[in-house]
Image (tube, rainbow, N blue to C red):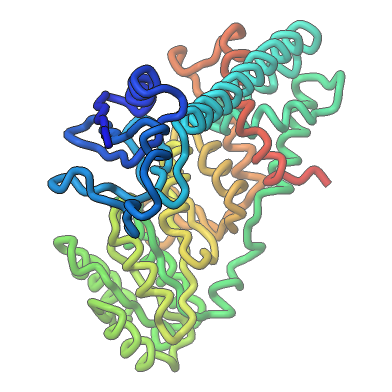
Amino acid sequence: MNVRKFTAKTSREALRMLREALGADAVILSNRNVDGKVEILAMEGEAVNAIPPSAAPKQAPQFVPEAPIITPPFRTENKGFESPSFAQPRSAPELMRANEMSDVMSEIRSMRSMLESQLAELSWTNTQQRQPQKAEVLREMLATGLSASLSRFMVAKMPENETVQNGIEWIKTILARNLSSIDNENEILEKGGVYALVGPTGVGKTTTTAKLAARCVMRHGPSKLALITTDGYRIGGYEQLRIYGKILGVMVHAVKDESDLRIALSELKNKHTVLIDTVGVSQRDKMVTDQVAMLSGADTGVKRLLCLNATSTGETLSEVVRAYQGTGLAGCILTKLDEAATIGGALDIAIRQKLTLYYVASGQRVPEDLHVANKQYLIDRAFKLKRETAAFKYLDDELPLLMSAAANVTASASREVSFG
């Protein structure tokens, strides 16, 4: 019984060596990863057939005691395939065909993506020539910070032969139709309830909590409001909110974990409104999950309002929403509006994630610099706060390339935007 060992950097190379040495009928006994290389044990098919039934072992033999046979599933670093067992051996040609088919499918997908991008580029080059006004509207949308995929989809749906100004007004109408916001402050001030302001570090949660608290006190008085902070990490975090609470005549309660939060909420159940200022956590920190679980696990229904920094890019805001989404957000508050060069990215995320805008914060003054979100005002402001720096403007010959890159994600935009 002649067992051969073949070692190579990849499974394909090892199988090629095996086929050259033992032929297409060779039987693979085992494979494994040894020091970053693929090792295959095999023998000729004729040798297996020559073994008498009485001599055949009841279990798979260990040909190499110091290196036991690896049972499936087995995957190499470069190419994945299942290792055959003795019960169901697979020949080298079968494995080769499986790997080749996987490579072919991968190449087909790559070619399809490339063709879609090239067709999108040609389409937009043609659009620029036939309908230059659409290209101008597209450039205006990109300048606001709106994503390329959403901009491409909306401009493609824009009525034909519109002027640039009419086209922009049509875009604004569609954006306003898809952007959700509260009608007035009664959603919070009159209904009351428990609200937790969440978000990354430095987004302005504590200041925004103080602004909301001031509005609640002005409407119902200090006896109807309670403040809770979970910020035991940041130096001065509790003290900052305590100072605001002292000015408003409202007690501030500090909690450390879910158990403390449940006790505090139970003691404050007679309050009309409870505002929770949470510790700022990066969207990439695993503590986000713990924080969401703590707020979701409270017996009292805690509505989470996500504070979104208007100065952040769309990609960053998208990460933030995904991290803090949890079982669902009640809505969001757009902060640092006075510092943002563009706000289209924030509006884009609110539309895509179906987030209801509650307030916008545009300064440090308490409570003056907090306003109920007016979606028409925000959209108009987005088109006024455009990228003016030459380095960030898109040229005519850059638009087709940009649109081709956005072609693969435009399908998702079609599910997120309503034109009806």
